[in-house]
Amino acid sequence: MGDVQTGPARPAWRGRLTDPAVPVLALVCGAVAAVWYAPLLTWAIIGGLAGYSLSGSV
Image (cartoon, rainbow, N blue to C red):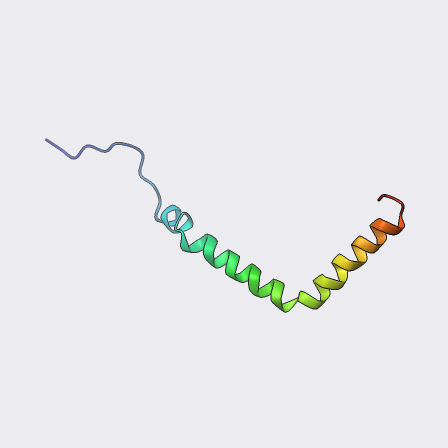
């Protein structure tokens, strides 16, 4: 008997794309970027909350 294939062949890049290391690497890069921009993000959040409270939306 010959080889039986159960489904269509998947390309090699698809295995790398679904590897658990890819999302972990993306989260690590996001965390590093957030730490790098922490002062800017802090002031942006404080400014947004102040604008929200001063606009009468509270």
